[in-house]
Image 1 (cartoon, helix red, strand yellow):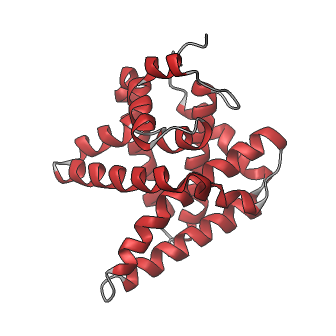
Image 2: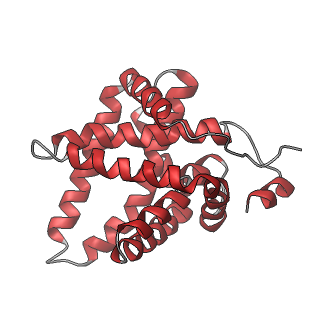
Length: 214
């Protein structure tokens, strides 16, 4: 019986370094996916003031698209290359990805309203929700609880990881936001590497083992 994964260390520098190496293997596809993501986000946000249904439409897209980034990086890890069609794999787990996206956004926004630290803690706890939905075929709540119970032992380190994310995104916003198109997939890729190191790829969890995580 496979035991629930545990973390012995948090290697942020290693995860970022390996993510950059993966990024360099398929920069065109990853940048195209990132560009599409931000074009959709900018379009929905700029138009939502006049048409609130577009904000809802974005909520229905964000989760599956984020899952798609993990699918791209996992494919590069396995094969050394990626196809752009892989970016759409998030729609194979559409319902849990959408619900997780809405919940994570809501929880994070509530956390950041009460100063910055609660928001960082919430993001850190649920940091592996999307790849767990994709790889382990978990439901949204199962994935959130599995992530929480694995990361809670290193909550301070993962909170720092999230803080680093926002710093990198802020730097990426320079030069009319162009840098964000590079920084965003790089950071998501580092989470994909972290997930691989902790949970592994192409592994299944039996029902009894799943209960150990959640």
